[in-house]
Amino acid sequence: MENIEIYNSNCIAQNELEDNSIDLFICDPPFGIGEKDFDKHYKRSKKTVTKSYEEAPDNYGKWTYEWLSIAKQKMKDNATLYLISGWSNLGEVLNAIHKCDLHVKNHLIWKFNFGVYTKSKFVSSHYHILMVTKSDKSNITFNQYCRFGPQEKVKEGGSAAYRDMEDVFIINKDMKQAKEGEVKNNNKLPDELIDKLIQYSSNEGDSICDFFMGNFTTAYSAIKLGRKISGFELNKELYDYNMKKLSQLEFGHGLSGLKKITIEKPANQGKKITEEEKQNIYKDYQELLSQSKLKKDISKILQDKYGRGHFSIKNILDSFKN
Image (cartoon, rainbow, N blue to C red):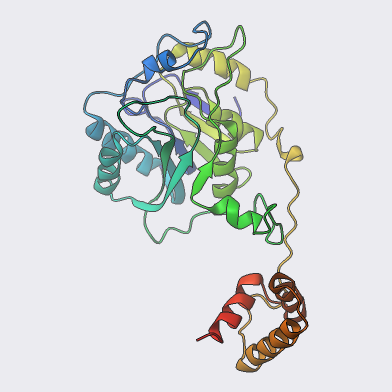
């Protein structure tokens, strides 16, 4: 199928993908913590859950190093790899990244409501997402304003783009009961999470790869957002079911429904601030303050007058406190 290269095979033993061909990896490997029995934690029907879940081998560190080494070969020099991990084997994962001479650029936390209660320890309610590059000098794709413009605000008044880029993602897990006739793993990643990673770290037409397709969430998001997809899935039941569904999707069918982003930046953003400008800003601030105006309103007036952003005005005013 055009734009789809997914194999029903092992990503280590039978990897035929071209070297230096992938712009973005999103990998959610088995955590090695008995995931095939996760269904016992939930009151859900097992009718639609595959019975052939592939667990990680016993030597988790060695296995992680092996598949990461291959992923490194397939990555373009400026590619990004997101590796999703639980905490149990996080040390093994970080050691494998180090042994592969890869660079951890960001360590994200995905916070969610797990829905399980514990009696002798704190409740686990997060996964780790490691943002990995070939080196600390890799010129990776990062679309800062792909979801919110710099002028957009959250309800509380702060920057929506800044909030969206914070390294703690609060996104609910996909706990929906599969419909009759559907096939899935116990542990499905939410579409919102994968969509977000794809939008920030790739562009239309880029090549995305997932060595552990599972429920094919990465594949569905990639095709929806107009990215080529490649990868591997050992479970034939999941492979056959999802490949059939993928073949029926129009490439890029979700692009038209994306929010249109407008980027409105302050007129003088990036320009050097002179000492005279600083003095004028502080003088205006004192004058407006004497008129009993609220500080947030004063900041907006100064931003508009001087063509500077919120933080520029704040830093200038703070400098006069010392």
